[in-house]
Image (cartoon, rainbow, N blue to C red; front, side, top):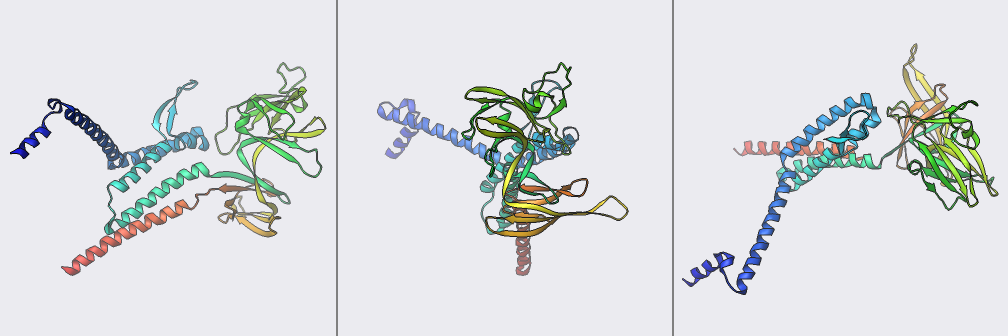
Length: 421
């Protein structure tokens, strides 16, 4: 009976227990309720992220996204469609000419990230590690590797081009859609000192100071895409700048180009400010082929706006470019580049032949035969730096191996069962 009375006291409501013990029981009960609510919240969260319904929803959203983004390439161009639909968390829409936009659909990063969380969560909550589930585990790991590899490719990969004429030698490739302002100190006849200011800093239109330069570069204007026209003497349009070529031309801004067959032509107006004051403004543009010279003190500098350069440890010389077509037609049969690879620091020197479906892989970069000059005496090599280039192959092998293992596991189990019966 005493045990029963003890049980009755413990189960009584906390407010009926008086004294210090009653307060302790009330506090413990509140803590248990909070813990129970927290456990329920996290359990519901895990159930949501590991649910099969979420998997189906993500796959359905992905199908819509791919179909919609593919159609959008017709109007937006490949580059802009990729950025707005697949390389974004949300897709925005706004009336034509309006300054505001509102999110209307999840983007590629959102759908892919949610599917990745769903797969990982389901992997560790719904699938137990057993011999009969090895194939499913391998298959899921392959799909997870594929999603992670695509994300790493978007974040880490870089594509540049190496344009060579026959006999030309270069040790750098260029970014087609990014520019840089090169301030080159040519005072010493033996070597040049180059300070490269990237496009994202130029777009901020501010003062740029570098310890290597005895002056400040003040970016007054920057146009991501523009057109320069010769200014007539009686023109009312103001000149683009006060010095050199800028005093004879006018500059106009244009919308950015998004299709793959054309590229932006950036321009900017910079003011050179020395400790003694401003010495004028210069127009820098990719329209200007020759670098413009300035003198500050006893040092000579050149200004040039050019595609951003990525320097290599090796020199590449185009020895011969070949362009073969089918007899009687203009249809390309093959085009190839015979390139001399020369690396002075190691003494490596060899000839390589780059042609369609036979790229050069060198120091973590892949050189593809991409295009050619109209006169058949120049080549354009696409240089791709992608640290995660192996992940698609690895993921495909894992998925195929997982499906094979799962099939053989069930097959052997079925055969064994038939033999024993």
